[in-house]
Length: 273
Image 1 (cartoon, rainbow, N blue to C red):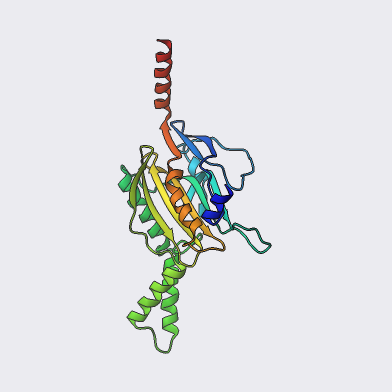
Image 2: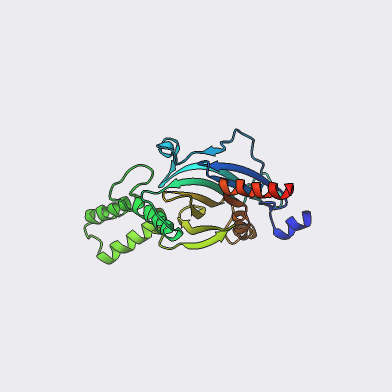
């Protein structure tokens, strides 16, 4: 074990030899099983919500949380920290990989995984480019553009169109929310997911987002967030954390409860015979 840590160049991360299973029930129709490495460091036990009746009238609107554009119902969180090989008084973690599993709701219904991907990206882009500026960074890109326009107007020599466009693009890249135009489709445990990436260059965080349909208006999300504390994204721990995403996604399983009941009946009838 010590030699493995030395070869890797860090301590911590997910241990796939130490898996913990947790179960959640979504709207009495779906059983969500999360089979993942235990948190590192260990998570303090606390009361866990197991049942999520998300399609009940106004249940989502009454219970959602919001961070920036995302309104969501939190279900599960796992995290794995990475540390330097040697502890010193001035050292801290290199960074962390965090997984949050949530339920989201669309403004308009969709009928396929591809439509889900387009709808999620449209909501993301429309939110930050909204002409209406509000809380939670709504219309933040518009606000940045307006500031550049106002700054140009105050100058003795206003920016040329080319200069103005350069400043807009630079500000959006550094402190805005660049448009996301592409997603991929992938499958884990016979579940179809879309995947896209959120990157903001002025932050030390990068997020990979996976989403799959629960029904026409609701979807399940698995958000993987990399937090670079005192490290860079070219370090061995970061590459290994990236590589861990695929086996972590394979630990997320969704089954219709009626299907599970039917399988149980078949097993019981086989045992009786």
